Length: 111
Image (cartoon, rainbow, N blue to C red; front, side, top):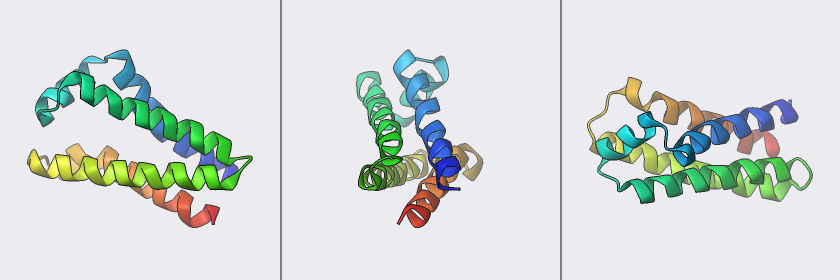
């Protein structure tokens, strides 16, 4: 179960990271919607990529995975605050909520 959850969290981190770093139009739109400069918004993708790498390392050295998941939780709390400030609906914030649930579950299982 731990390996499957780890791989799910890697996907949850990696998919949006790649989209941000590749400059996907939906990500550019999101940056404008939230009022975040594109260069800064792409840094979120760097953090997500680092979290994915940390979770993979966590398969061999558990503390790295725990730190990566904790970092994702902080990032996702920030994402939810940003969604709230933008007056987004729950549906618009749902990907961040689901990623937060996966990250929290990983932390609970990995300890």
